[in-house]
Structures are given as C-alpha cells and as structure tokens.
Image 1 (cartoon, rainbow, N blue to C red):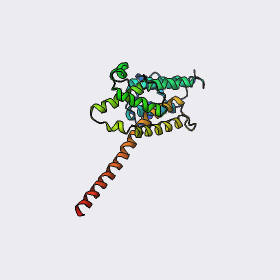
Image 2: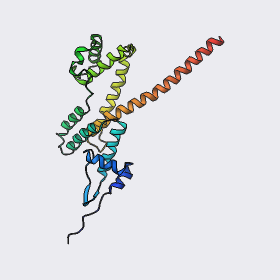
Image 3: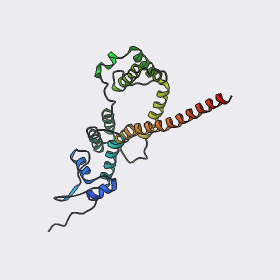
Image 4: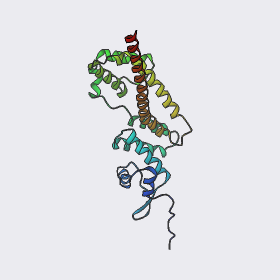
Length: 236
C-alpha cells in the first residue's frame, strides 16, 4: 500500500481566513485564472502554500484598491507567471510585457485623437515633453491621453490646469523617480515585473490619496486665511 501524500500547506478555508477572502471568491479567482489551483490531496481536497497567500493578496489589491478589471488582472498574472519561468535575461521581456498590459487606456477617438486635438494643446504637450526630456512617443497612448485630458479641461473652460502644467509635471517626475527606485530595489522578494505592476497600480492610488490628503490641508489653510482676512477687514 502506497504511503499517503504529505499534507503540508493549508486548506482553502484557512487560506481564506488568512487573506480575509471567502471560499466562493477564492474558487472564482481560480476559475477565472487569477489564482493557481492548489495541490490535490484527494478528489475534493487541495492544499495551498504561502505563494497562494501572496498571490491572493496581490489579486485583492489590484481589484479592490487598484480598481482593475478581472480581465486586466488575468493579463497581469499571466505576465507574472511567465516571469517566474524566465532566466534573468528574459525578465527584461517580462517587464516590457507588464508595461504593455499597464499602458494608458486609448483615447476616446483612438489613433485619430492626436489629429483631432486642439493644435494649442498639442503644442503645449510637445513643448512640455521636450523641455523635460520625456521620450514617450507622440503617437503613444500616454501622450495622447495627456492631450485628450487637457483638451477636455479646455472645453470645460478650466484652462488654469494648462497654466499650471509644470507644477503637475514636477509632481509626476518625483513620483516616477520613486517608482524607478522601488523597481530597482533588491529588498523585496518579488520579481521586477511584479514590482512594476505594484508601483504603477497601487503607486497611482497612493499618489491620488496623498494628493487628496494634501488638498484637505491646503483647503483648510486657505479657508483659515480667508476668514482671518475677512475678520481683519471688518474690524479694521
């Protein structure tokens, strides 16, 4: 009689408790190809490892904090799974694949967006990119997205965003520099493609949350200054 297989690892219920995810949700992630299946120990039992814990936490972060779709997360984990099978040389390809998956959404007008954009907006963004030595292609989705957003703001008569474009660019460069430092950090046990994904998705969310936090402080300070000025004017 063959010895019973070892029962190392955790059952799906324990995996769920560890990550705060229900068993039906874990099974859904497995069906959708987001989470690898566990190692079968019987016809209806499987065991899961710490790798499953890490992947499940990553999936939750991308879906719930990052706001990504299941389809997008499936594409991301496919890149990450491919990276784990690559040599060090091949991991550069995985990073490029991750960048492609995370590319900015295409503008509403698709490839024609640049052709239909306001010429003044185009000139503004071209000058910004040249001034800052940004080398993103002018026909790429990132460039087109900036143009589209500025055009939309202009249509809403919110031209002051364009007037302060360098202030926004300064903040973007600082965030991009922090992303690059994290990407090349050796303190994390994750691969470079995963670090890129986390920096791009959760880093964007962190930057947005910090901006709202700073805006709250700035708004409070402005309100206090206005109130003080009004009081001085009344009593003066």
